[in-house]
Each structure stands twice: as C-alpha cells, then as structure tokens.
Amino acid sequence: NDTTSYNQNVNPSGSNTSYGINFNIRSGNGSKLPVNVTLTSGPNVLHPVDLSNYCQNCGTPQWQYNPYLDTTVPKVGDSYVFNITYSDTSSETITQPVTAVLGPADVVTALSPNLNTASPSTTPTFTWTYPASPGNYTFQFYIQQNNGGTVWQIPGNNSNSNGFTNTQIPMPAGLVYGTDPTDSTNTPAYSTLTSGIIYNWSIQAKDSNGNSAQISTYFTPQ
Image 1 (tube, rainbow, N blue to C red):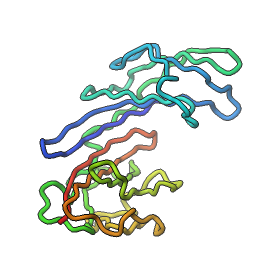
Image 2 (cartoon, one colour):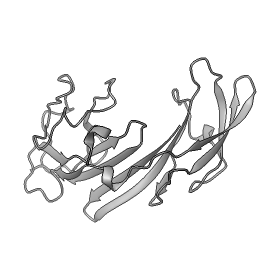
Image 3 (spheres, helix red, strand yellow):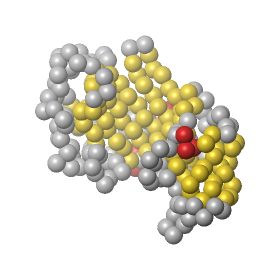
C-alpha cells in the first residue's frame, strides 16, 4: 500500500515543510513471499529502483521504501508501478495509487512550549490545538534531545497502540511531562529535563489509512 506524509518543522530560521511517500509491499496470509521488488515508474521519484537496496532485514512489511519529496506535493491518483518476483519464481506487475494526502489543515497547531516560551519548565505541560474533526485521527507524541536521544514517546515504544485520541489527552488541559494518561507504566527516560539543553518535540496526526501529518518545534528549559 501507499501512504503519504507531511512534515512541518518550526525552527529558529522559520517554518519548513516537506512531503514524503511510503511504499509497503508485503505478502498476505497464505500468499507467496516477495523476494525482489523494483519500482519501475511513478511521478516525483527516481526509477527504476531495486528496493533490496533500501530494505535490508525489513521483516514485516517485507519491502519498504520511503522517498523524500521535499516541497513537492503528492496528488491523489498518482500511480506507482512495481515489478514483484516471488519465492516460487513467478512474477507480476502491480500498480499502487495515492489515495489521500494530508497537509497543513491536518496538523495540530499552537504547540507550547516553543522557541518563544519564556523560561519553560524542566517538567513542562505540553499543549496544542487539535485540527478540525480530531476524531478522524489518532495522534503520537515524541520528544528527544536535539542531538537525537529519545526522551519519551506516546504511545510507548513497546505499546500495541497505534496512537492516542483527542479525548484521551484533551486540550487545553495538556500533557504533563512524565504522566501518560493512556499508560501509567510509560514513563520518560529522565524524571526531569535538563536546563540549558535544547529539546525537540512533535505531534503526528494519522488517518485510518496510515497517512500522516506531523509538526515539531524546539524549546530550552530553564
């Protein structure tokens, strides 16, 4: 299947946006196992592409490729063609269309704390404004140190959940650092953040088909 992603990053130099497309090729229950997959055509991406160069030890899905589109906006109806060879040496050609594209109207807004927050706490309460019709999405929260170290995420790394709803973490009450309303066992790597360290945090909205829209920002606790 194909899914699309939209990313908005609010940083000291302004706000940057980008798009991506995500291809997953997998066998169904009782189906033949794909052993080679090649992307042969489709708009806005290089082709042909042998996905074995991008999918070492994929597991499930067996084949996965996530080309970056930068500011190019994918369109509903865009079609991508794959040649697939199976373990029994048979092969086929399949076409995967883009069925939905999320964008600026689908991200949460008004993230706080942010770059302009005066003296943010080392145990902040994170707040945001959900998009219109928030029940159409599930959400994921993620915070990391600016150098890449993961601090906390909801759902947790070992959770079976795909995300939380706007009723599980309502606004404007917000998300208190260290308290996951959806799982009391899911705690951050550190009991408090560190003063003077830059942290990046994000909220991703995802629709029922796996298309996503994510926004991220920075702050420095005092």
